[in-house]
Length: 184
Image (cartoon, rainbow, N blue to C red; front, side, top):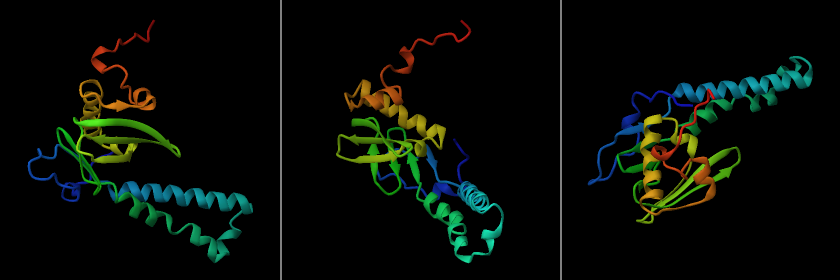
């Protein structure tokens, strides 16, 4: 799910080192996103405790509140670690350093829990292991990264695993795909 960029986020994301192009796209989450997920977690816990006790009797047990109160704060702290900036040919995720998206030697996708992870390495030895949906929070940023992945696999000779080719559609570049009519 894509979301609007945080209005002050550009000052919070990592800036490119000297000699690299400017930031074209960036993402830094809003507080509203984190608080929404925290409220959802609270609602789930309240519903569970109410269902388990067949009513609201659990509310008088003080230590059960310890399972409810921290969730908004946990999401606020965890969400603030997502800091992404991208240029025409580079990507910086968090504080992990710069990776050249058009000079990749490895493009793999793995599954961790319920999420897909992108495992990439460039010819300078820089590596990045990141949850794909975090990169997709800004559609334009994902476009910059995805074009680098396509180029690296098809023109640069980067190795890729079967999951990367299938999940990201790297088997056939978009301009060579035959779009079938769904009306037939």
